[in-house]
Structure formats: structure tokens, C-alpha cells
Length: 314
Image (cartoon, rainbow, N blue to C red):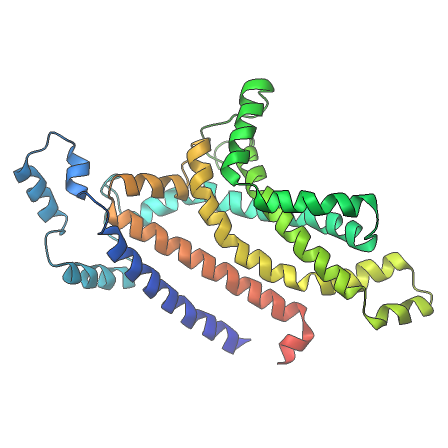
């Protein structure tokens, strides 16, 4: 277990170095200058040059990189150009909506996927099992932004039950804030439910072929007991891995959904930072998302080890 954690921490350092280096040089390929974007179209060249110098963006690119890297190692991501605040503070201030939506959609997806997949796998020739196959395929293929726009049309124009844009702080007004996040959570969960159902259904179907079930039936153990006590725990193991891997999709999907629903989380903040050429904030947010993704996968690996005795022994 300790060696696994050390390996994952080593991987975290490598991933952060690669992501940070790649993003640093990629964002400098974006046309335009941060100073010009900040000052507006009527700024003079001398004003742009002065602000560029003040932001330490006029030196050699390789020198800028090593300066940024040295500061980032000690947790100093610099100062956001658009917010005029430390990047770390901006990241913390905008973390709650994105993290809450990701966690809530994951929990909702697992809660829905388990009974759906279990019912379909237990009775593979039933009408429900046949209907679930195209529904799952549709859920996997459906673009999240399309479903978001459909929900905005339904709940914003016709039914008007949930607000379709904006955000209220969850800590100050939890009930009202949750209303603003219901639709984005549904959109995020729709793809995950389809993915988890497909994975779990296949896993359960394979588990039902094992010989120990025949032995259990011969001993008179009820079918429901075999299904819930023996088949389901073993079948859930692949889902743990899929949950960790799909967290990256949630962080990426948050960018689009936060733009559609105007939610000031990491996604919308990153989009606005790219538009404003806010280099420090872009780098800080991408690195933070990479850290979250790696940590979630580390937790998934640890849960897998704890859940599977064979892997734990190895």
C-alpha cells in the first residue's frame, strides 16, 4: 500500500511537470498580448510595453518558464491579471461549484447505475434489458452541451421550475444554491450513468458465469442473496476504476456547462482567463485540475486495492 502511494505521488510530480511545461509554452502561442487585452483597443504601444514589463513578460521565454516553475514549486502561481488577486485565492474562491457538481453527479450516477445494470444483467432477455442497450448508447454518444441547451429550453421556457443561469453561494444559501446546480448536475450525470451502466452490466454478466454461483444455488442460497452479496461486490471493482478515470471528463465538461449555465466555477473562470490572456491564472487552473484528477485516481486505486484481496496480496 505504501509503495502504491509513493508511486502515485511520483506520477503526480511527473504529470504536473509535463502539464505545466506543455501549457506554459502552448499559451504563449495564443495570438495577442495579455497587456493589450487588459488595456483595451485604445492603449498606446508605450502603455502596452510598460504593462508587459511590469508583468515580467518581456524577457526571454525560457527565462520566464524557469522563473514561473521556481515560484510554482513553492505554491506561488503569481497574480491574476483579470482579478488583480493571487492566483491561488482565485482558484479557491471558484472551486466550490465545480467540485460540488463533479461529486454530486458521480454519486447520482452510481446510485442510478447500480439498480439499472443489475436488473438488466440478471434478466438479459427481458424487455428492460433490450431497451437499456440503445438508451445507454444514446447516453454515451449525446453531447453534453446539446442536453444542456435542451434542458435550458424545457425548464427555462416551458416549465420554469429550475433557474437556468447564474449561481448562488452554496455555503450562504444551500437550498437556493442547489436549485441553480440541479440542471448542470443532471447533464454531467447523464453521460456517467450510461458509462457506469455499460461497464457494470458487462461485469455482472461475466460474474454470473462463475461456478461458485452454481454451488451456492445447490446449497439453497436464495438468488437475491447471491446477486447482492456475491455478484455485485465483485462486479463493482471495474466501476471503481471507471469512476476515477471519468473524473477528467467531469472537469472538462464543467468548462462547457459553466459557460451554458453561467456558473462561476473553474470552467468558466478558465475560459475567461483564456479570453483575457491571463497566463498566470490559466497555468494555475490547469495545474489544479491535473492535481485533482491524479488525486481522485489515487483514491480509486486505493479503494480497488482495499476491495480486492488478490490485488492487496500482490
